Image (tube, rainbow, N blue to C red; front, side, top):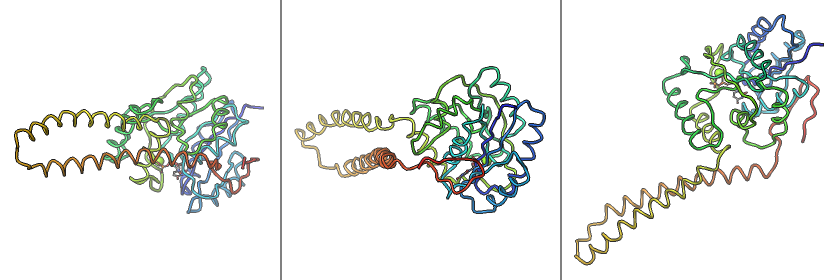
Length: 315
Ligand code: UDP
Ligand code: MG
């Protein structure tokens, strides 16, 4: 029997893309020395994704589906798929919209066979298919995330990657909420290798990520891996205490010299500025407390509605 490689694809409203992806995968993976299994995770889609998957699974022996009970988010959907693939020698994760070109898979497998445990695809240049604002945003996200976090992410790293079974086993054992897989996979360690790629255009439909969703993702990425933002409060506190120390001699001198009391603008500026600062820092602390709150409840990362794979969900 050939060793099994699983391809895990999270799908949210991807009804039109899935058949095209399956076709492309079949084309690229034909005559391989591995057996392939395509595991689609329907992340609570509102179009006919679940129906499409069920129909496809009936006539295509490689297609398997996991339907989540609602929309849990891409990372959770990916985790649900990966969790169901403990019997594979390697797991590949990719998007359903054909932005991650299947033609890269043989190259990933070759790199894995050379001894790399994680082979990930990354964009060297900005994605030409996204807007200018998105490019700037993406660039600054990686800069800031790397500055703040203990885990270093490469610019343009994606969720298109191959993971060896030992990495998969480690991921399966991770039960934290607020999953940020891009960071987690880096954090796991082992031999990692990046291969360059240029994302294709989305085959059909629109991106599921609005500006707000991207901002949330950025905050999640930063706070999931680091408590460094909390130091911000301490540093800023020191800075302003020192600054005010410089101001006090001036106040004393002005008292002795009987300057006029024209301090109203400076008072207002200080109050507004410090008020804003306090709100930012309270917000940061709040995010972490929120994370603790969610974590202590120990809820499952996702809930499976049905699947044609044999899965036992830990509940
Ligand atoms: N996705 C998902 N759940 C979500 C949002 C997205 O499973 O809540 C999937 C989506 O179907 C696709 C992948 O994640 O396969 C990437 O999503 P998208 O193409 O919208 O993101 P972008 O390419 O803009 O980063
Ligand atoms: Mg996409």
